[in-house]
Amino acid sequence: GAVVSQHPSRVICKSGTSVKIECRSLDFQATTMFWYRQFPKQSLMLMATSNEGSKATYEQGVEKDKFLINHASLTLSTLTVTSAHPEDSSFYICSARDRLQSGELFFGEGSRLTVL
Amino acid sequence: AQRVTQPEKLLSVFKGAPVELKCNYSYSGSPELFWYVQYSRQRLQLLLRHISRESIKGFTADLNKGETSFHLKKPFAQEEDSAMYYCALSGPGSARQLTFGSGTQLTVLP
Image (cartoon, rainbow over all chains, first blue to last red; front, side, top):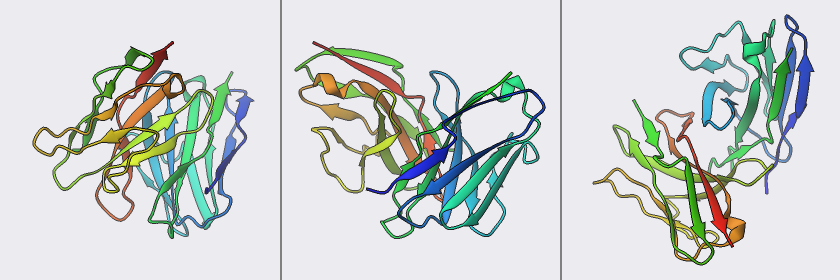
């Protein structure tokens, strides 16, 4: 089946630094990718919808300048957490929609960010 | 606004017993509903979608528009069914974002 790969799977950084998380569709093209945030023992909260070649659409309450999303190609979207603070520590998950296979969504394995 | 409610955070059943994970939704339109499963230390994966009306791993789910429900059922639970289950609803627009319920942790006891 289709695979979505996220990198890094775990990252620890100091407060004030920026962290980039990559989301790649390995064997399919994804015009649309989604970024979610998941707190411990809670559901996935949609942060933004990333469209190839255009600006991301952010959900209400999500700071665009804090969470920069770039979707430069049909197989790669990146999420950059800028000037990270401890409250940004979370599990970030991306998903990609296969534009050919009836639009099925495939999920990455997630990236755990810890900000010290 | 669309919303998905899973009333049970935790559910435990014995192996061989029937299991039902509840899901109710709120949506002003014709919904597209899904069940996703997340096994321990694995990524989220699609279990089934209502439009395909198929049975995966013995699980079925029927969309009841009158009760706005999409409960997941299996007649005989197996230990390997222990996992986190999320009900999700696909939103409007071309992007069709998913809105997830809070999830139900199913534990099947031996």
